[in-house]
Image 1 (tube, rainbow, N blue to C red):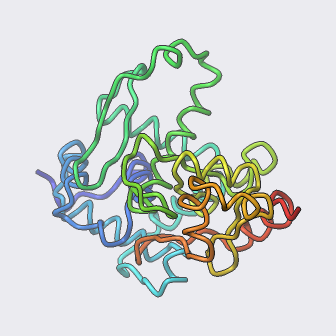
Image 2: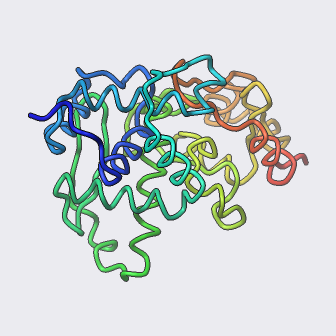
Length: 265
């Protein structure tokens, strides 16, 4: 298995896709999904893990958390990083498609990266199989965003720590429709349970500059209801929980959500 060959642009596109679906501590040669990708690329797990750690040195979100990565990033690494993030709405779906082809997922399959298990490929629901070709790129982008955000939160709801992936939503802080440039930005995402996602989307909850949950007056008025008290009252002023090596949600985006979407009455 090759371990010293140069990385190509196509390989780096796939590496960037996986990079955003792992936390820094998971960029290890023993992580099952890295082992699985290395086999597909004809590389060693150590080579893939090192490349991910090289990319981490270019990540401003990790620098905010005091994480430096490895200092061996190549000129091509830097160039690809810049291209990928300057045109995320095109690059992320392209990377998702490249990853799917490498793994062997069919057009009618869903593919998800679960760090501790590897790649999980499942049949897509029938109502999604017949989608038009024009929607495929949008679907790939949505798949990329969901997987990246859920994994950035350690596969758990940031509020309740619910760890059943089928009940988790990758919530956009700034709405998809009004902020196209941030649609696929992992720092524009929160991993929430379906209930808390709906409350966030409707402006019934928000998160302050310290990531603590804030309840709207409408929810506070309903705290006498057991369900509201248990699902919202119990978490008021409690900060979101993320892994220590993940990318934090962008506080400027949360501030805009509080200003424009959060219900203050």
